[in-house]
Amino acid sequence: MSALAPPNTGPRPEPAVGIFWRVAGVLVVDRTPLSRAEPYGDCLTHGPGHYERWDAWQRLGVRGLRKQGHPDAIRVTEYDEWPRGRVVYEVPSARFVLYADRRLQQPATLASLRTAFGLDAADVVVRGDPHYR
Image 1 (tube, one colour):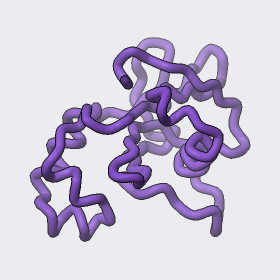
Image 2 (tube, helix red, strand yellow; image 1 turned 30 degrees about the horizontal axis):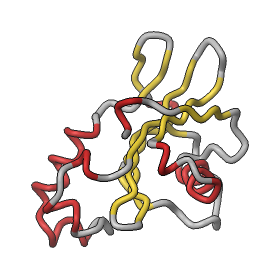
Image 3 (spheres, rainbow, N blue to C red; image 1 turned 180 degrees about the vertical axis):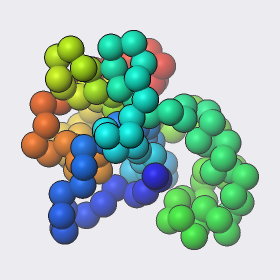
């Protein structure tokens, strides 16, 4: 499921794993509820990677992107031009790990990501990763 970061209203979404970007000032996420996440080693993760999701969004064209509420900039830029990251669930430690570009490791952005992935009440650790620079 792809979506813009949801507002803080309504029922709390099921905790999820997934990928995200900040594109032209907008937080864009693609997530999978934890109950449908894919095993990857000791973790549960979101299936599509950044490149695959971005490519699929680009094929939608501007009209399709707008219909899904995504920024037009996705159509004309590459996936690695924007700060990005990933949320995974570590099964042994029973916690979520939010890997993010350091530019996204700001309190307000991290709070929005926790909300977008339904992690407001979850144990979450934030880490950097060389992939997300």
